[in-house]
Length: 150
Figure 1 (cartoon, rainbow, N blue to C red):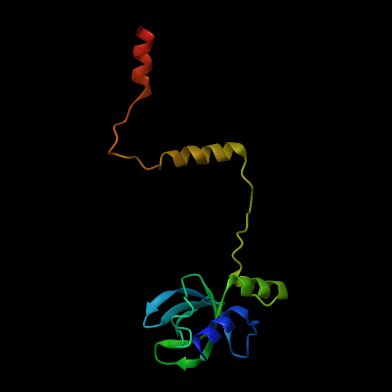
Figure 2: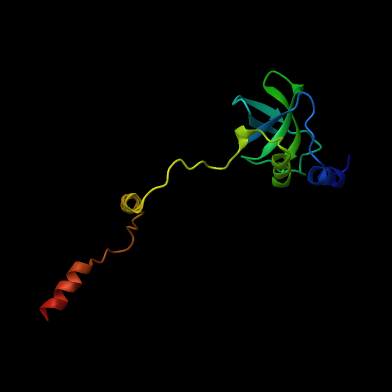
């Protein structure tokens, strides 16, 4: 397959997961075209990126892939990436009901905070702000007291 055809297939094809293939989330590259992935059950393993995807598809931390654990298995490597999923693919899989619920990224809000609680959180966060030591600190109390004396 040529480079253009591989790119077109990655972007335009409908995703169908075959027998033995599983969804996984990329935890990051580990060198030599190997990526560490996390499966739905939480287990982690190394998988390889096949030569047809190299320099065509860039896989980063947090991207989702389809892995075939039966291909390219060796002592350290636990499978091969079959397909890199783009946001369009994930949206289609969610609408069709094929996307695993373990990979849903929508945050769940347990309770809402009241305004008094928010003010306390804001005042606590003010103490953690970065202080620039290269600038002199001008205090407002000194200037206001000199104006009052006049």
